Length: 431
Image (cartoon, rainbow, N blue to C red):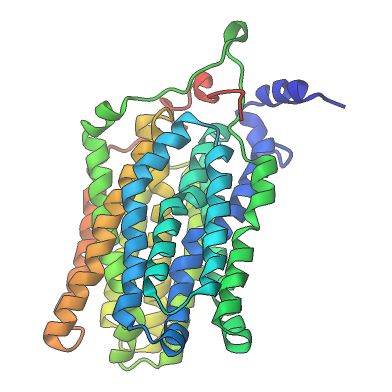
């Protein structure tokens, strides 16, 4: 039986070619990350929040606008603390950040089952969940996946990101069933339990890949400084793409069901369109994950953004169920896949040394676009009394603008040369 030291040395001997083998340890890390992301903040809070609005209003008498404010507080908190979580992930082994985050998130969720009449407790809990949200989600796991994969990096990133999509398919129906049959307090306990499912595998398997350098020394990760990255055109192009696509996506998706019903689409078909979007996003991520390791990631990004923009245009003008479902599917394929390409390009341009803090800054950019999009759409709706075609077409135009901006990134092919120098694969034996 191998000792822990021998196992570490054996792991260090794996090469790029081993990534094609199912026995490659990195795939075990990817599986654990998939489960962790599947039961993280990302699929649980956004996809179940609205299910509790009516029960909480009936039980506690809170106004809808007041409850929505708690979600907004969590989103703002996520945006503000993401760079700080990135700094921690760049400096410490991943489990030191992920495991406490999962535990705090699960306990906070379960504590909502004990809510009383004071809405302040509701706000405080969502603030706490916002603090640890990205410590439980793909944001935290991506940094570790970069240490394990080079040749199959795109597919590995796609795999863990599909965890969020799978969770968004199964968790909301289960939550709704519990609310309907056992009550909303039991549903919050269920979600707290589900949030703990990622804890065992993460504890056992998730760690940065250890690789020894020459003469027994530890090879350090390569990458540019944060200041140098922020002074580069590539970073700001990626940030602009993030702001534009998030503005269009959130502005449209948060109102998707209402937009479709205004166009004469039935409520059941509108709900089905949301499911189509989620399922198509999983499909798109896996396909893009396979292609991105073989083709130019910059042009793949352009294609997926154009697909999302086309879906936005179809949804904006859809007058039939078929057009609505196709448009929602294209929207899911494009925007779901863009979530894969973004971090892939961040690592490609700037390396792994300060990846997490730079990735955290793009989450702040996402919050800027994603937070203002719904507000602008709501403003125009309140002013006009309906979703005007011109406004919806404007959202599609902004999505096409994101695709156009991506053309500014220079095309390249093949494995990521800079970040993936052999010496950059490891950061430490300590995990």
